[in-house]
Length: 594
Image (tube, rainbow, N blue to C red):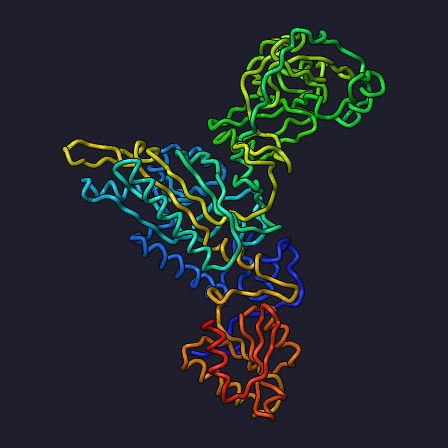
């Protein structure tokens, strides 16, 4: 069937939507692929659904090829399984909760581990029923606090999630490897650049976790890599701790007046002016800054946390989020220091110093319940300039292990270009990406919580081991657009383009329209999908829309028709050739089959 632009339910825009930041968001809206329904919620129009269908078909093809079987769970779910795994609470504000007319707690599914586990528990009783690989393509819901970037971070999204069920770890690892390769085939076919990086399993748990990151300068995720082969997202990077230093001969700590130093830079400048060192100048790396947070627990209570790290580093909020999950943190503000019971007068904002032996803040009794955690670089023997817990005063030569200790280590500082790779494979490089897939060797978390067991060959009940494998379908639409667009518009790879060919009838002569319709019919008969621009619009409008919509091949039926020719353009490269209209079908099909 030939689709004509005159009847296609779409509307192209010449201006970017006001709320769009990323190129994919701008172009998908301008091209009439999606429309905003609410913050983080989008309506799919026919062109957008055509791309989604192509992606889903590729995903199904590769998943089915490794023996996976498709199921479909409801969107509206009972709360009991999620309460059993504690995710009813752990998801916090990200979960869409509701009640039915009988006041039963329900939710809109954010992910379906519990439902898959219970389904297998209901239907499988023996080792003979395993191994098993089930997947679904389903709409998910998460109440993102800050939905942004169009399809990249929405509150409603389409996802393929798969789960494997095995009798032992060897079986899990084998299925994990199969799906990892299937994902590579999927993303190769989708036509965008990606890397596989080690990831933090976070609240999902499990022994191994990897992400597939679509490379994009506009991506919201940061990943690192080394020339020696290391690759990980920033949340998974483990900072190598330097060796401890002998502090037997280190000078004693001393408090100095340091007025008007609200920043690390001003503290360093004043220190070099008033307290210079003979061997080298002070730098931000010589300072220990201590940042105060409230940690919000699952029961709604809050406790204070102080994080100490070198002053030339900032805290990476995503790393902090992962380190504290499922709890969350929010920075203390000025009012907290002035009004918080048990903290006022002890934690001087901007001049916080560490506690000695976890109990004393340089002579002042530490407030009850304050945790103090240190960056891995703050090892015994390292000497620091840090706050004296009194406005206008800092401590110099404060030695870790001698003058203060902590309640533990927290690795949440930013990762920077040139930092050493944890595996010793060289300095790290940073890149941006869009998380498009995440796979886990999940282990026993959900099987234990929901009592998923089967009989083994000896008639003994054994807990089933699971794997979890997510792939963002709607995110893939955005990732492909981000990686392939140009200054003119979208530029779809042929595997996912809504149509193979966009035919432009460029002119007012009825002979041009008739020839364009006839060519479209011949291509349709040859199995080529065609979008025919038959509108009574100017050639300029049609060319602009052809470039914006991004079909891989554009055919122009226009003035050259009087010489019996049409023009075939490659949307990606811009290359064009004139061919005899009688040879056009063969020429176009040969391009498509390359």
